[in-house]
Image 1 (cartoon, rainbow, N blue to C red):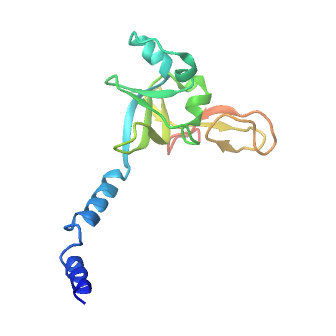
Image 2: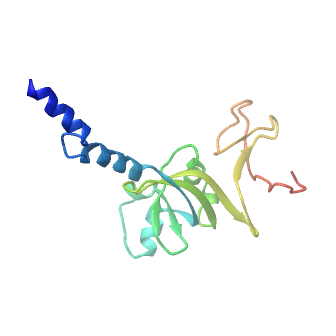
Image 3: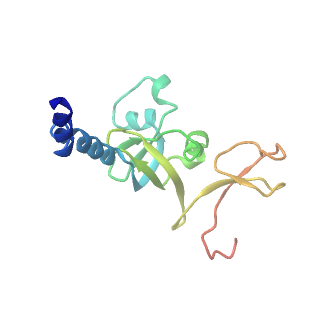
Length: 164
């Protein structure tokens, strides 16, 4: 008879664990939520970045890993997905100034790239791959999904650019 009252009182005053269970889970969830960051630097193979620091490594693990070397020298690994794939596949986008907008989570070392922009002259522009036959663009190098022809690297014009 009293067991039901004890549970009801425990829930009313914040749970049977002193109130920390639900609040702790909510706090951990909020802390784990990604935040959007903008970082400048250059995309580079991890093996090259480590070699520049005098840290040789086995290429089988580091050659295909791309990191952002920030302007202050930090190395941040990039999660390979559709948004970052061009950096992994096209060497022309590496080892040059870039601006990355990405999601960063506190307990995960990798950045989840949202957009990449490459510095062209004094402006950052988004790389895109263009089919001159079909006039379509995609985010990373590939054969045209429409005509199966070649696609060329172009940079998305700035808004208001007369070459648009």
